[in-house]
Picture 1: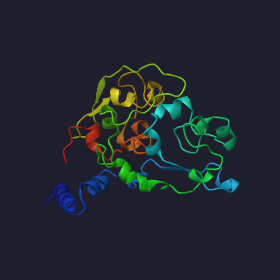
Picture 2 (picture 1 turned 30 degrees about the vertical axis):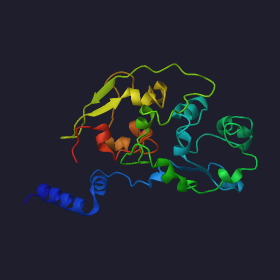
Picture 3 (picture 1 turned 180 degrees about the vertical axis):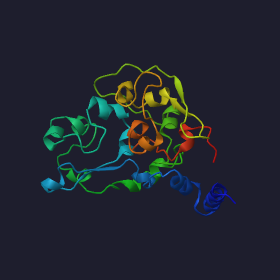
Picture 4 (picture 1 turned 45 degrees about the vertical axis):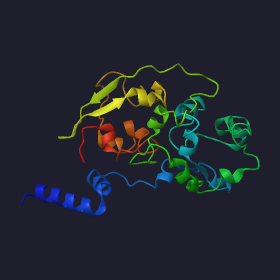
Length: 252
């Protein structure tokens, strides 16, 4: 029996015991994922600990119910990388960053509610997740919720802006991206689903060259390191463990 045949047999046997998800993660060297209620959660500790207070917990799933990604990451100017944006309590009280919503009208105000942010608990409010996700379209990875289907079904209608209404994104072309690995079917990129959450300038030109086939070194290895698609996927958007979501021709 050849080495390749032995390896395939071992993987099939392993799948029967530990399941496809774990085998796939091992085979493709995918990172281990947190519990669905914790996926996309952050502990922001740029200066908190140094100033003698607990880090700020932030849950993406509780916020993306109300707003698209562009509201915070474009209009409010939060950097995509956690801990980079210089946020202070004075900024928030002045209506910047979190303070654009947390003003006592749209959302709770910071004064007297410190524990709701500075709690040092990345799982803060995670007990609410099971009830929240009970009747939502399921997905296999990440939060195990298909957020795009939620929008298409009208189950959630997140706001696209607070004060500065952006132009409506009408580009809906699907791109077919040939895979570099043998026997891996092409990936399909739908602009329409991405435009539901972000602006064109989120990806172009910093992440992807706008010219067709001109982005160099676009590989899964680099995506898994947080480049290109990995800028959002593996962090908040569904993770790369969901191979069929991008490569619809892949078989299990």
